[in-house]
Length: 281
Image 1 (cartoon, rainbow, N blue to C red):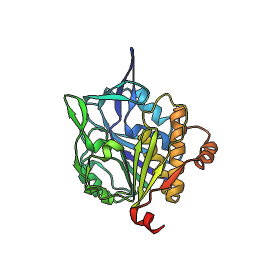
Image 2 (image 1 turned 45 degrees about the horizontal axis):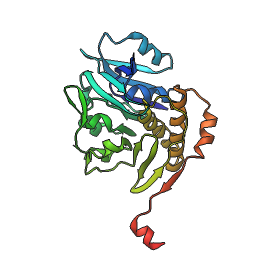
Image 3 (image 1 turned 45 degrees about the vertical axis):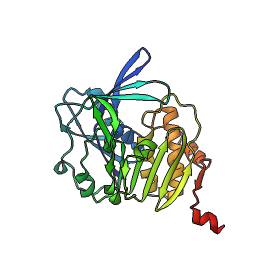
Image 4 (image 1 turned 60 degrees about the horizontal axis):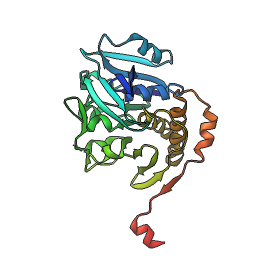
C-alpha cells in the first residue's frame, strides 16, 4: 500500500523541568513512523539545509522515502511539559508553506495531510482526489509572538476528505463543518468521539502506562486511515485505538501486532443515540 504524508518535519526542543532535549517531530514524522511497518511511505516536507541529517536517516532506515523541498527555515517548536499530559507550545521558526504545484497528483492509496503551522493551503486539499486524511491541528493554529493559539476557520473544505482528526479544542474551531466520511475527535486519555456518516459514537482509549503522549493524535489518524482503507468502520476504530495505545507505551512502531489486535477487542465503542432514536425505544 502506497501512502504519501505531507507536512513539515519539525525541530522540537523539549523542556521537562531542568532537562532540555532536541529531536525530530511534527505530525508527518509520527504518522510516517507508525505506518512504516505496513506501507510504502513517502514524506513530502520542507526543511532547511541545517536540519540534522541523522534525523532523516532514522526515517530512511525504516524504509521511508523523504522528499525535501527547499526552505530557508525549519519549523521549530519549544514544547514545555507541565505534566505528563499538559504542555505549552511556542513557535520559534517556521518553514515555508507548500505551493499547490509542488504536490504530486500521482496515484497513491492514502494521502495524509498533517500540517503543524498552517503550511498546507486549502487549495491543496481541494485539488487532491485520492483517499485523503488530514489533521485539523495545523489548519486552526494561530501564532502571536510565537505563542500557539487557536483561530476559527470555515471548515467546508472537509467535505472532500475521507478521514479527519481533531482534538476537542480544535474541533470547536471548525465553523459549519461539512463532515468527512469519518470525523475523529480525541480527548487525550479521556473518552473520545467518532462521527461516521452522520452517526456519533463514543470510544474509550485503552488504559496503559504511558510516559509521553507526543504524537498520539498523529498516530491515531494514521492507524485509523490505514485500517479504514481495508476494514469496516467499527473494526478500524477499535484497531486504531489499540495500536495507538501500544505505540505510546513502547514509543516504537514495532511491537506485538497480534497482541494489539487482540486488545482491540477490548476497546469500548458505544453509539450515541439521538433524541428520536431514544424516543422510539
